[in-house]
Amino acid sequence: MNFNYYNTFIQVAADCPVYHGITPQTKKAGKTVPMIQYELLMENPYTYTQEELYYQVHIRHKEIPLEEAQARRDEIWNELYSKHHACLRACMLPKKYGWGLHFDTEGRIALYGMESKEYDQYAQSSDVKQLAAMRSSRK
Image 1 (cartoon, rainbow, N blue to C red):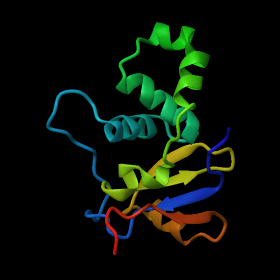
Image 2 (image 1 turned 45 degrees about the vertical axis):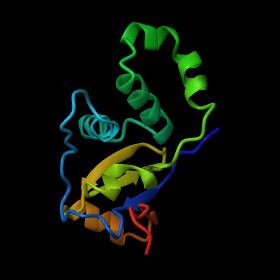
Image 3 (image 1 turned 135 degrees about the vertical axis):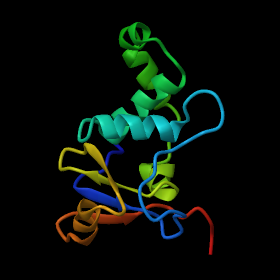
Image 4 (image 1 turned 60 degrees about the vertical axis):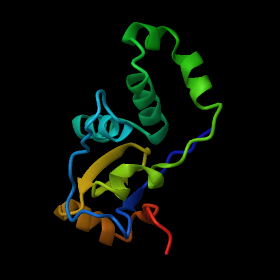
């Protein structure tokens, strides 16, 4: 199974409610999936593929201890990917929080705020496949 993107840029959704990249916040205890995705991608640009990002988010969101995650990596991975997952076009970072997602030729991801010159460069580039994040509402 490989559902990574390669040499692709996911632009923010047409109905994104913000005008620049913002940090996901929550009012409840614990971190949300968008918060974990944001932290991993900001701290580690071009480190994770979509599949690896989903795995890392899963173990953090479920608070699986590092030792257990390492010892059971294949089992956890196979269990995680035995179910369908939406692609990153449907994640909240480009839909709600104003972040574009660039995938390099090896499928590794970096975030760019929609106000940044890098975002504009990737969004206007004919050298990368252009995709839009999914809208939050139907029109």
